[in-house]
Amino acid sequence: MDPNIEKRLHQFIQAKGLRNTSQRNAIVESIFSSDEHFNADELWDRIRKTQSRSSRATVYRTITLLVEAGLLHEIDLGDDQKTYDPNFVESPAHNHLVCIDCGKVIEFEDAHIQLMNDCAARRLGFRPERQTLKIEACCEQLRLHGRCENLISARIQGKRLPKQR
Image 1 (spheres, rainbow, N blue to C red):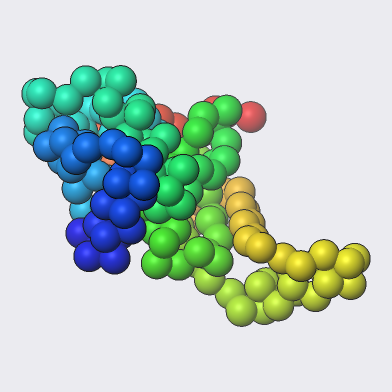
Image 2 (cartoon, rainbow, N blue to C red):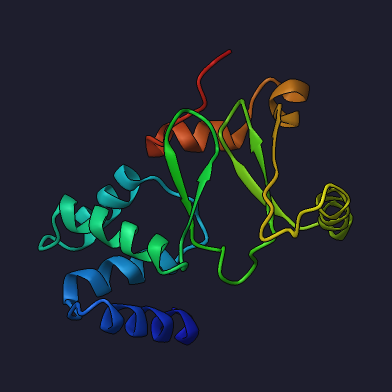
């Protein structure tokens, strides 16, 4: 885990008058050991497989604490579920491309998009604080070849898939 994240979390926990716990540390380690986006249930499943001492409530409280500390970003990738992005600290201006067929999420940055958003906000009398862009697209593999390895892998792993339109 990035030492900067660890330091910021420790300072935030101290400022809130909380104590450090091994369960919370294991959850935080699990979150930041991967670049994958997740929802609370997916994280709970991951934690349950590796650490039996943490409860679902501890997972939810830790997510809330990390969002409040500005270390984890809550994003809307569809399906009416809160999704969390652990890559927000390292790259706060990144955007998301979401495949509506297989649910794969690809992060990207584009200076042109950032400049366009900045110009639009300033032209309308605002100062931009953060920006996010979500593009929903159809999977080329599925369209061209009739099958998508990401879709097959997602089904095998039991990951949630986008709702069919």
